[in-house]
Length: 105
DNA sequence: ACGGTGACGCTCA
DNA sequence: TTGAGCGCCACCG
Image (cartoon, rainbow, N blue to C red; front, side, top):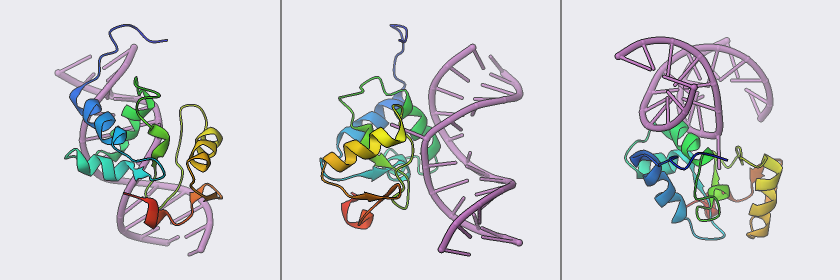
């Protein structure tokens, strides 16, 4: 539970907006989002923002993975994230997205 | 204001 | 190929 004033900063807002734009069945990467918002080197901060994602169900943070197709991390647990992605129709083997190159936006 | 931390990314061995 | 280390930027106490 966070305080009521856990306001989002501009950077975070951009991250959430970009993440929300990810269509179902596809995925994006932290670096890709970072580049989209105009900070190609802030991939780390992007993950930081998603971790505190106040728009949990609104923003499909589980559709954001690491560069190369690695699942990456997840606030509720990596396994959980994998499970959700599989439900979206994606295939994951050994924590890596199959055909990642084709499903990445 | 400063320093530490982290759901990353890339290079080197 | 796989593993480990360094660099980056934004957020928090």
